[in-house]
Length: 74
Image (cartoon, rainbow, N blue to C red; front, side, top):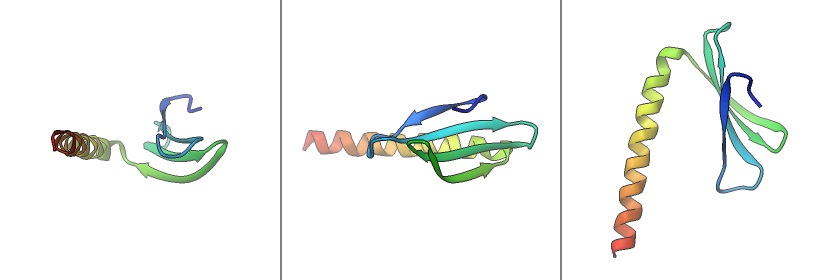
């Protein structure tokens, strides 16, 4: 587990997780995808890019919520 960050468990595949870790010594925030104990991919962000990613995730969550609500109303 990251010493500075957090973990989100995946919902579509058992053992899948997204780890978010801060690396201030490198000036990076790292998103890594794990399957059980194996890292299967990473994406390194500059700290200045994080607010844009948060906005994108927030917009996607709103869109997904609206879709789910619309489907439930039908």
